[in-house]
Image 1 (tube, helix red, strand yellow):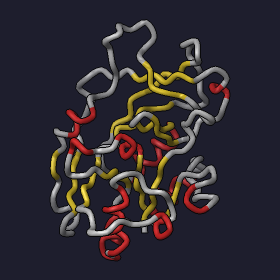
Image 2 (image 1 turned 90 degrees about the vertical axis):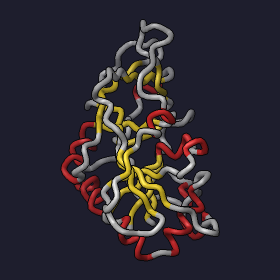
Image 3 (image 1 turned 180 degrees about the vertical axis):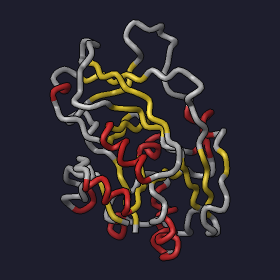
Image 4 (image 1 turned 135 degrees about the horizontal axis):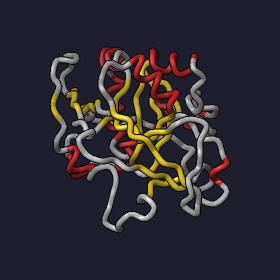
Length: 238
């Protein structure tokens, strides 16, 4: 068994904080990476486990370039509690507490770039703990099944392109067990030009990491409080 996480808190009626340029920066300055260009540089990492139609990739490090990450709250939203792990605009953001847990469980070198939080006037906001843009570097490509999985059997509403490879996962207990050995990963389909922006904020985590999160009181990581994620939680067991 493993888990599927998709943040539901960074939406217009909730947290409402979005990536923005650095205050006072040139209009052409941007932070992060051109995602499709970046994904073309993924390195295959065979031998993690042998499963036909499953390929592992490692994303390149970005530490050789300056990363300036800013998030701006809409008016009044800067006083709302920030979850330890959330995603918006195709990016993942993570707290210092969650970062510490991941580093204690996962041996892969992921990257964490400090984030400057701003209010609606672009003035700095001081959070209770540091936050980072989380460059999770482990990706899997799982060949789609010849059917699609429904929300009823998954327990959540899949995003586009997720329902086909998830059908294969559901139909293969061996694959599901092996995926449960991987601490943290994201999925990408083979056709890079068809990749879905929202998929970049979907994380899959194993039981060891979820247990460690719960021990440390990481918030936003409880199971769905209502079937298909209609409640406030963002985590579903697979």
